[in-house]
Length: 596
Image 1 (cartoon, one colour):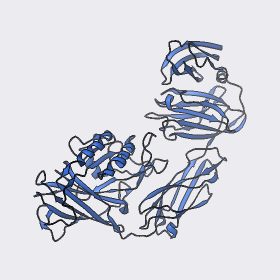
Image 2 (spheres, one colour):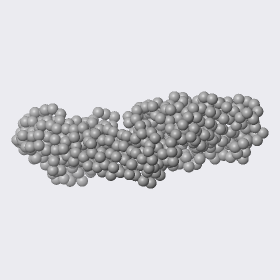
Image 3 (cartoon, helix red, strand yellow):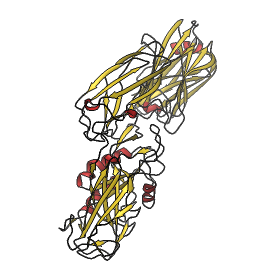
Image 4 (cartoon, one colour):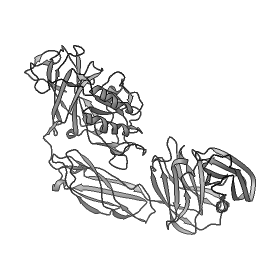
């Protein structure tokens, strides 16, 4: 770091005194608050904190800084690297309460490590108070050499709390695309792509004059100084590029090096010496999450994340894209991107034929009708799976889920004609339990699809291992797993898997007979609920459970064979929805019922 000070300055401390300030206001004003927001890319509620900062705090003129830190900030699963920085970790350490998201408002006692619900009141309280000092910050960035020149000036309109305060100068970055976990609960306005790629604004990068600032001494009413710092911006932090044309500046004065912040200011620097006028980048493109069987037709309508890197921004761009060698072309106009802004665009569908592994490619060209001077970031490629194949006379569907299966989860199995051959609706599965269903596979070759749904949007594996397995089950003998869907990573709100199954046909198995004869009546029930099924020389458990999987009543039948009838007394059962579960060593059958 190189620091230079105006030669006209008279030495007054470790700061510098003027008879009359050049830029900063000398009119008394209220304090400007600083929210240091401790956040993480795997934090469930952090997007809600970001929304509060953007919608309720930034419009007041306060400064907000997103500092990724702690256990909820980890390696980015899409881009690699991390948005954490060494300086950000040092700043967060004395103030972060580890309850995410939390933050510190002007580092005031009682305002450190507080939850997002307390931020607005804390900011408003501080900004209603008179400030003894005003501060000004400005700067220029040479985008080619990455040289940053920062000018900061302060003026004490009143008496400071002590003769020594501390001046802090730093910078953050806007429009940083990175992964952010979202279970479906939190605000989605920051998400650029379905893959969890998120637009981080106000992303803290570093301090210019040290982690805890520099002392300014011999202060009294009327004290003023102008400080100019010159540094070269680094190329990246933890593998995340620092875009010189996307930074913003801030400065604040604190009572002690780590003490309460008195007031603050922020500014957009002037950008000079751009390396190019018209330049664009292709940051990311979506693939297809769902599967289909090999040879089936599909369509590819990618979302492409495009960036403007030239001084003139980006108005038009040409794209070429396709799957498995296919090519489609599209020109986009009126993009309206300023320099270093990013935008996700959805392209027109292009047809393709599913293979076991499918390759997709995208390329951009001709930003604003001109040749791109830097084409290294103009292409993107990736792969996605097609369905697999298997052989079975009958399949067993085995599901392992989390503690919210009964309230959130459902699935359907469809044959090649699109007919539903197994429908397990919401409320049919039991929490934190492995459950099985059986489906006969008719003679021939057919494509089966498995449609999985989660109402909450965080898959079936919250804090647990989960899966959806399709298993070869021939002659009531368990065979190999044909397909295994990881419902913790593949499934968010919905997912379609596919498998082509070749079958020689099968006689109806014992569990199929039981399923065909399974009947629950009356439904709704008031005084009694009857359950009938066809037993196949086995031990059975027949249970009535609530939607959380808690057993209300149960009957055990040993060595049962033939038609079985079980009755539950329901006159004393609370009104509501329940599940009848018939279990044996061959699997489990369920049916939803209502007690009125």
